[in-house]
Image (cartoon, rainbow, N blue to C red; front, side):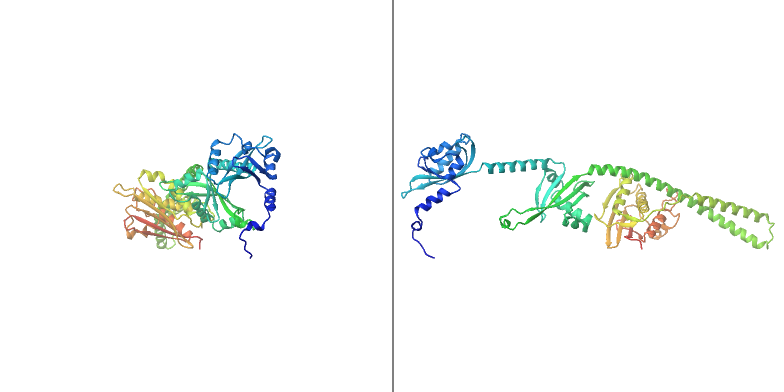
Length: 508
């Protein structure tokens, strides 16, 4: 490539003039006192002044008093230091209309380094400023609306990074003490929905009205939220993708707190559950009473039947023994009484098998038992596995079974001599197809030799003052068997009684 010692020798002077003349940027040249010596056609387009109107006049003819004096002082301070200045001024066109001029002024120095002229270049940025201001105003309005919204709002990019949030979100983040609410919400929704979570997001369908709960530090009750997750895409504004547009993926998380609604629903449900379980307990109590009466009558009737059989064998077929007639009448009367009792026993309603949430049932039973727990000063350690698969079973039977076991635990801790009154309830999934429930109390426990006997009909460790006829654990064993499960009584190291239940997800 040819090198030139003085590149200006290769370009004619007229070319420089034409470049300035044809430039799309308004250009003016002034003397050292800012008197205009030259303007190009673009200058006329921006300011409205033709060359004959402006040549010889000072650049200050374009100034407007809206521009603060400090701006001009700063500008001249830079120029007197022989340095360029760039900024925005409010100028006035020939027709009196104000406009914003983005202006660059550069001093032109002679061979001695003295300023002889100034080169001014400016463009009208009024419309650009208006668009920017409109954008900022809309952004401020949106931020105000978002911040004042009563719902939690969070915008996440494809990597899960938080891009935008509102005041409600920040408040929740403070309550969660270090945990990121958006991450916790998405994790909980994913655990609840399983494969449907990713399927809904990938299809663009999104997720709407998914209810989740958080146990926040220092809070005894969970906080509930109704969450929606909306995926959307927008064009990437980076320079790399100017000619090959690429869309950036985002997730918009909306969460509305429904804790109060849930508490009201829970209160209504709890009252209904208490009524239902009270009715079930009454029916069970009547069944136990009737079964006990049948059991008590059956023994003497068996003896009468045996005596009647012995007399019949001794009489050699002669049917004139008065005692024989008395025994036969007593046996018939007793059998009739038994038939009457059996007919009066309340029938157990037929219940269909359905998917059951074990955690939910245990929560309901503990809620129903709250008054007894408080009255006895029992400390409850409720440790459910957050997400468990649903078990196929009979909901009312399982609820009654857990109520019986928790009532037994409370009765066991009713001794005045007890110092420690603790009830531990845990759920887990030790195997893919099995759920495990542990109900442990700090009562006096069950002796080793009685751990099998307590499942016998009409046997009770509560003595004569017991509230039941000793059929509680019989009922529990029956329900466990119907669900193809297993129940074991253990003695914890600290004493008391531990009931270990293992129930398959599907009845075998």
